[in-house]
Amino acid sequence: MISRWPWVTSVAAAIIVLTPPAREIFYDAFISSERFLQDLAQMIYLGGVAIAILLAVIEWRVRVIIIRRRALAAAATGEQTIES
Image 1 (cartoon, rainbow, N blue to C red):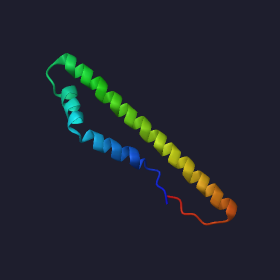
Image 2: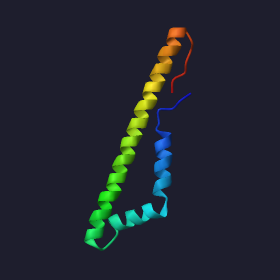
Image 3: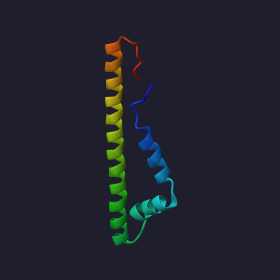
């Protein structure tokens, strides 16, 4: 059985977020007192979030396509499938 949830992207994003450089960028982006550093760090942080969301959507779509193709192949051969 295959899930539609983008597990690989979610786990990778969680691991990256928990690293010290990522926490430092988060601190610089939202807590730092220097305005220039805050603007730069926010751009980097939000760019990373956008990339993670884009990868999750792509992974989700690929999983949906795989599930549909497996269901169609099973229907063509007369097999029973359980779709999650």
